[in-house]
Length: 382
Ligand code: MG
Image (cartoon, rainbow, N blue to C red):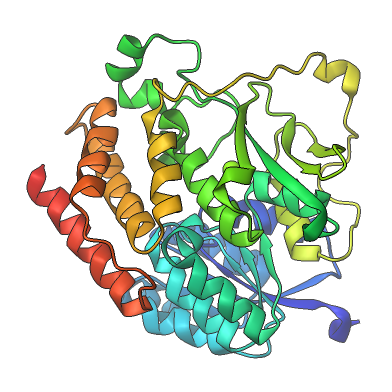
């Protein structure tokens, strides 16, 4: 039976997606063999996971944390830092790696795994926003599968049969906590109000991005790369109930959508067990009656200018999306620390885009260099 199990490693095991992935794996005994757990700063959660999962390898952020793990778990190989992640992603015994770290740290390990012909379940947006052209080119050349974990992209992946017959993608957005609030209320919002997402419980950075709709913009760029779709054919529709997770329109006018109550367990399980479907953690079936009504409206681009900015950066290509991502992330961190207002996130990001010297077809090193330069610029601006 062991030989039948899919061997997987989890990057970012203690984060929101990582912990939910472990819940999925625990509900599917006999399906997965977890090779490595790579966790962040939450060492107590990581220890609990090690006891439950019993991986061969553990990778921590710092050498200090690696020592703590080594002292308690004598039979486990303990790695740390970027080198540790590289070693995990070079281990060809893996069938799949779940990349659920947050931020630019996901990019290099993802590329390493692709070079080693290991399939990827991708929950890290930055990887495709920063280097979508390079990543998708290598995916094709190496013949690996890259499965999206983001609920919208999972929905699209589930609906697509033949890319050549697709007329367009419809990405849904909940609209976040400020959909029905005035612009003034939104611009004055506190960190707590901004973190109170009506439909999804996620990490802090992505929750702020959901409030400004930058998250949707990043998802448009992600979808462009994943499905090789021109930006003109990717439409965002606000759907407050978050039941329709996204849809596809085919050239004959038929629209196929994927539905369900909001849950990340389903897209995580879909990516991990692809191409199979199995009974999973969500045992209750979807109920149309309970769902009741489904509303759809056009996004308010004036109120949420980050969405338009992301479209523009994506269309320009080159290092514009790198600039967008880096400037936005630094601004979000400053907002979370109470140093700027919510409205400043757009202003800072737009200013960086405005001043950016684009590099078309950048190398990975140029991408990281630009990322560093832009973050430095934002920090000195604040
Ligand atoms: Mg999403």
